[in-house]
Image (cartoon, rainbow, N blue to C red; front, side):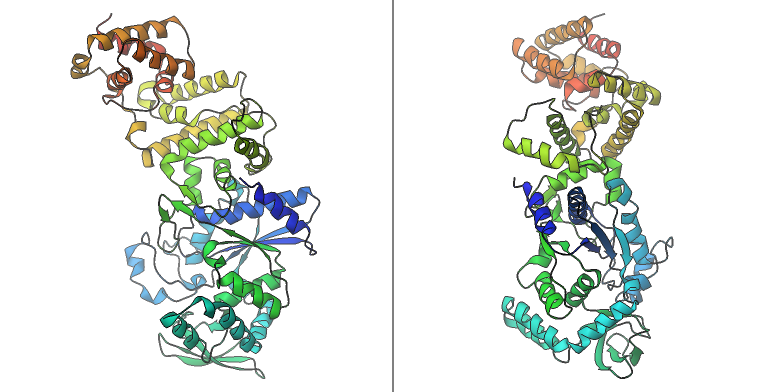
Length: 543
């Protein structure tokens, strides 16, 4: 793993002449914003911190691209709202909130994301694009683009046309006939994407336009009316306006002939600013699907915080090279947390690394996984898999009993009294685990303990299995066990009595009524020992 790529990027940026070093990120709020977008948020946050540690002044800006047109309704939008087809094509800041709780469509979906920023440690300056476009400095850049439209058109053709052929090339070239680099909000229907600028009068600063949707024709004053640069010109204009040094971007923008290629030429040759440092990154997949905000295929940042701590997300992003896609599946959250905590123990030299990769992860990635500063000692943590089990035992132990058990295990595993923050984190982990079980866990993690051992389960136990279970009863009565020791000894019992994994299946059936379940040792240890022994004795007919 080249980490470490991010260290090289920091050095490259440090060598640039401009100060402050300005990072830029942006997102169109076309629907619920998914965690795939977070790769660039994590990169900008970590690089800012690395450079500040080196004495470099930095700035990080985040654009809410609310001047973009709403092209479609995501599946989760209320049906009565979808009936308003007149909203399609309008800038998102001019579309009402679909739930009636915010000023606009853009406000609703952007604020869902922005409200999670403190939890993840993100602290950019936030700009709303429709407000930027009304500033005199941006108006001047629009005028510059209009005056230099022939040069921009030449750049677009030189960069994009070689990547196209056949009908696509013909359509692309046809689009540039009487082409202008901007769009105007229609005075009648308020749509943006359906308008076409027909001319610009330099003397009175007016744009003439026509709307394909409602056939409106008119003239608007550039200085006073909402006018937006087209996407491939909008990006470099913002780079120039904010003196951007670095902007990560998804792979779709970084392909040959893509928006980054045209943007680099336009910002340098038209707007007079040097191209930002490019960090292309692959997508985060939800299972096997690419997440799409406008299609409602997403796992949001708010949803992440319901199932796992923010440092786990940052770890997931930072441990992979940007050029590699990340396949995320919510059902694998426990495994991801296990991997993070393994890295944490290596960092604090509690466990030995087994490879150079693990050494690099601990040294280079772990310190930047935290929203604030990393811990100075190994934190006391309630294992997530144990929390998954405990969170399902409220009917058996009661809510207070579950909490008491969790804090007892927390102290035992830490070998010390946990502090208040560690206690709070353990209780939050119980809540996360409970939510995860309800929404994402597969059947093997789900627990439903019956009041009695079913008769059919008792009758299904062979004499050999009963003998093995009697030995397990003796072991549990004899001493306190930790997870690893108990798991190992149960395996050994299966070998000794020549029943293999049938001993596991038998215990699961006795407690859960099915022949599978969560990892057995932590499951048994989450229950009161007296209850476990009593239940096993009931199953084998021992009093």
